Image 1 (cartoon, rainbow, N blue to C red):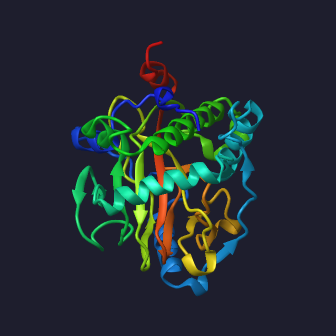
Image 2 (cartoon, rainbow, N blue to C red):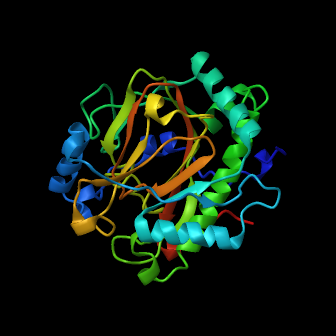
Length: 331
C-alpha cells in the first residue's frame, strides 16, 4: 500500500486532550434525544444481560466502497454510505484493502499490545475519568487502547513506532469518514432522519479525533452497552463533540462461532420495529469491515470476544453550519 500518512485528515486535537481541557458547562444527556429515554436504555441493558429477550435483525449486506483501490471510493459509494447512515444511524462497508494490508495492520496492532504500549480502556463521565468496572454507563470495559498520533509523536514517527500500515489505513479511513459526513450534511431530512442534530438541522464536519487502536485480548473481553458521546462531550463553542464513530476491523479469518466479539448495535426508535428497544443487529469484526454510526445516538456493545479482537477507531466532530465553517482547516 502506498504511503498516505501525509494525507491524514485534519486532526484538530486528540480526544484524550480535549476531554481533559473541556470547561465546565451544560451537557446534553442521552435522554435529550427523542425516544432515547432512561427506560429504553435500561431495556437494552436488560436484553444484553438476558439474551433470551433480545430480538436480532439480519445485518445489512456491506456496501462495497473500495477504499483500498488506487482511485479510492467513488462519489456514488460515498453517497450510498451517507444515505445508509442517515436512514438507519449506521452503515457497514467493505473496504477492499486486501488481505496483505489488513494482516500487516493487525500485526502492528498486536505487537503494540504485546509490547505494553496500550493501556486499559477507561470511562469518562461528565468529563472526568472513572476507573474500574461497574462504575459507569456500560458497566464493563475490557479493551486495551493506544492513541495513534499521540504515540507516533512521542516515539518520533511511524517507522520508529512500527505503525506504518496503521498510519496509512488511518489516513484512508478518516478521509472517507469525513467525506461521508460531508455528503450526509447535503441530504434532505426526509432521506436522512438519523443524520441530523437534535433540532433537525444538518450536521457539518468540524474535525476528527486522534485514532484509537484497540485490542480485546480474548478470554471473554467485552464492552457493555453504551453511547460513545452520551453526555455531550463537545460542550464548547466549537461544535457538538463526537457525532460519528468509524471503526475498521483488522481481524483476518475471524471465526464467528469460536471468536464471538460481535459489535451489537441497538436500533434507534426510527429504525426499530414498533420502537422495541430489544431489537438489534450484530456485525462480526471480520477484517476489512468498516462500520460508521452515530456516536451520540447509537447504543452499542462489544459482545464477549474469545480471541484477540483488533480495531482502529476514529471519531468525527460535527456542529452547525457556522461551526463547520469556522472549524475547517485553512487551505
